[in-house]
Amino acid sequence: MRRVLPALSFLLCVLCLACSKPALEPVLLTDTSTIDAEVLELVAQKVAAVRAAPSDAAAHADLALAYEANSLYEDAQKSYSNALTLDPSKSIWLFHRSVALVETGQIDEGLNLLKQAAAALPTHPAVQQRLGQRLLEIGDSEGARAAFLRALASRPDQPEFLTGLAGVELAHERWSEALALAKRALKGMPDYRPAYFAKGRALQGLGRHDEAKPLLAAGVNATVQWYPDELRPRFVSYMLTSSALAAEGSAANMRADYARAVELFEKLVKRKPEDADMLSNLGANLVELGRLERAEEVLKQALALAPQSFAVHLNLSDLYLRQNKLSQARDEAERAVEIGGTIGRTHYQLARVLGTLKDYEGAYRELKSAAGMDARDIRVYLALADTASRLGRSEEARAWCRRALDLDSGSLPGLGMQATLALSAGDLDEAQTALTALEQVAPQDKRTLWLRSELQKAGR
Image 1 (cartoon, rainbow, N blue to C red):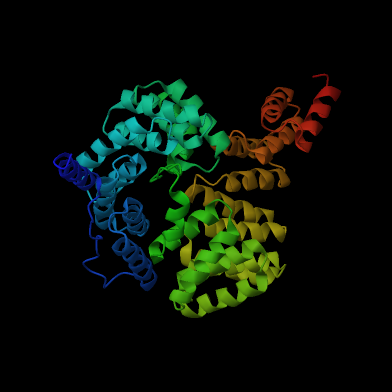
Image 2: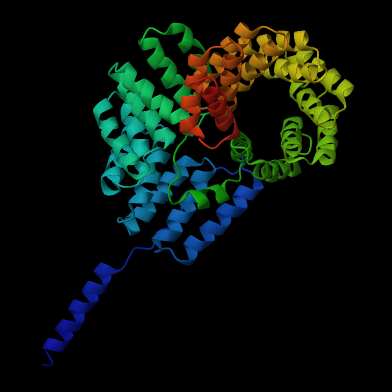
């Protein structure tokens, strides 16, 4: 018995050593000279957490996420590697490491890890979308199809996934199938530019070149929007570089989350109070929130710093228009056009002011200039249709309305205008087409109810 006990104790020690996790040093930044102080403070906190528990996989992964959120991808992938060494079961970390590797130019290794993560996480739509897009880019369209279909199994109407699948159909020159998928995507996300491009490519393939042109222009340089995974909330909270905050602020503005945009641009203005662009962006979002006094204060600061910025004059014009200071609104809009006349938004803003002043000819001229410079802005085409109608040019109005619906076939204002213009022209067939679309998009909307009643009166 005395001989057995020491042997058993030795065996237990060996097993414990085998089961214990190694203590790994945190991944440290080698050059901090260009990194914002807030980022360095966050990294220091995460490094301290790793040093306090060097065998804790989650601590290493949290440090990696802080690096990734601030575009420090090489440090991120190394820290994710540490986390996976300690706990290889966490496939979501494998996924994030694959993303970081691609960002550092290690494409093949990143794709290999992405495939492993996707195999381990078949029901995670964010992972499947990323794999589908990468496979589509390297020409593996059938692999991409399988990945996008797995993503769609979890989120059947997600516009980003539908657009990816449209890309697969385009690769096989199945134009009608691609067109149907792009339309479904735009129904769910009317401003999603990759879907514009997919729709334009499909129409081009079908020989409908005139319809394709504005959509292809709208999709130029479009970037894929990635579906968020489970780490996204913490990822966003760790985004502290000025470029990351500015990008997130712009994204918040695009999705009309103006309160979030103001919060982010306020941070940036505190960091860089002499940055006219950040002040202008803050002012624009304050205008959208209706905080007009604060907006005017901020925009005047921006103007003092950058009197030649068309964006500042543009935002001041919008502010004065909302305050019904029409003379000042016109002056600022004209100055914006003078400085930035190659940008469609300047002409659109001047048209808004001229329309409010009932100068419809002037507004129509500026709107046509805007349409020629930015073919993706549905507001311009709707304004052209409305202005042409006010000028008694009904056929032009109907043509502009159709252009708007080419960009967004489910636009309620566009369908309502199409119906009104068609009824005025006695074109009951086009009015019926508009009603059919409205019935699908918003069956109880007042425009739908009105059009249904009018067509019933006409015997339809």
